[in-house]
Image (cartoon, rainbow over all chains, first blue to last red; front, top):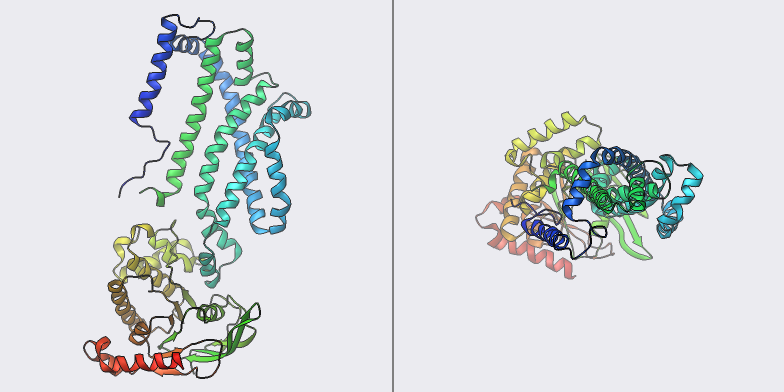
Length: 253
Length: 246
């Protein structure tokens, strides 16, 4: 059978367009169309990346730890909330509006508050990530749980299945697709959430590094860290894709 | 003693009476069909027998014991094969055993043996999406059988299949029904199918009680070549259509 191509797959055209952008950017710097201090050339960015490599890795490690901790707790909380909302309609009625409300609060506004409440350590970062990814995960899971065919549930009930068996045999596997879609979003949110949170209050992490280089007008380093953050997000999404492929073998062919 | 006895079942939805004082029976090793137009409550009746719905009044006995509101006693299969897309054929067939609390390994072995007996070994590790409609329906039947061979309820199981597949799978079902000594209660709106498969046919018209009698199909008459074109077949068909129009 033919393998389905996912839209996130890398193909020749996408590589070509990226290369093209870099070539244009490099030549713009080369022909002095923009001054170096305003926009460093790609080569300068690479040089900055190499010279600051150890420092970048040190900060990246911290950001990554925060992101993963926030991701794990946010995703688990989101799933637990979805299970409760799926099982008890009252819980859903009570919780759903609150969930929507948390999404309307701008992250930038609550991050400083979290710093005041939880200090400059890892805690406010994790809390911020949990707040941002809780909603997409729980809504996607709830959607997945309720999209199960009612006849499938009836069939299992006719076979004498209890609620727990119906959950593990049908609802959980049926909502895996939704889960991974939500996880892909959550992963990118987690990295960005960690960076923003560090930016707005902290001593270590890529967000802190970013504010430092910005204040000293080291735009080559600024771009280096921006690319590093993108690369981290992309790698995490790739990890999710691989896990998805292996945990949903029925979608493989 | 009959295998299944349904006594004076009534059911209504929002003041609309669907089933009214319905009684019938199925003997062991029989295939009994219930024929009727859509919306007369055939599926409601099945849900009651399967223990998924509560009737207003009446009783359902399986082997002399009441199975009202007690799911898990009879096997149940719908028009949709309802094979779970995220499980392999083998895991799908093993599902009823797992639900009964059987160990996973043991369940898979038993399912594997059943698939082998029926010559479906090559699709054991396939996912339902990779199979044809007829194949899926057969696998679903095996799953139904593995749940319980006691009484099998089939709710228009073949109506989504094309004519050729349908006739092939009907013969297949007759064969396994005989070989495994099953008892089947069959719902269909296809009169030809009912005559072809059943020992007796009940005609369900609506919520009236009168004339819920079965029409016996003589199994001897089925032995002639081209039974579906024979005069005997047409006689049965006329009889069923007449009682539907009465």
